[in-house]
Length: 131
Image 1 (tube, helix red, strand yellow):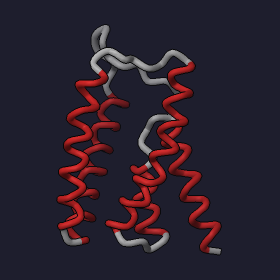
Image 2 (cartoon, rainbow, N blue to C red; image 1 turned 90 degrees about the vertical axis):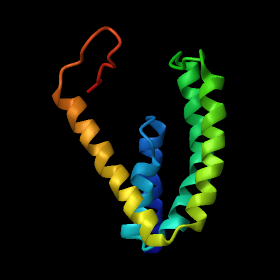
Image 3 (cartoon, rainbow, N blue to C red; image 1 turned 90 degrees about the horizontal axis):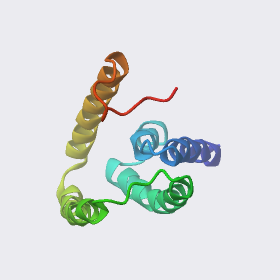
């Protein structure tokens, strides 16, 4: 039975990750709440699962012409640096701090998503939502 639960959690994470929505947003809560995996371990599993998902999703988006390459290096360099720094910080933090921080992140992310869904797109640079 646990195999099926882990499999379904992987399906949910892969589905969202493949669409570019961040599979970890679903995978980490599913692993911690449904599967009882400790927060730090769930984040590690998410990172390990993210690598092959992101490579495949990136290839698909590139093939479909949906990848904007201008300024990419200026985004990758600080992202790598801060990933290393915050990974070290996360490994030193107690589990309740990670859970609380991730919970706050999810609430803030949800508020932004609700706001963007309720407000009409403004200006020519606004991202259009596809239903």
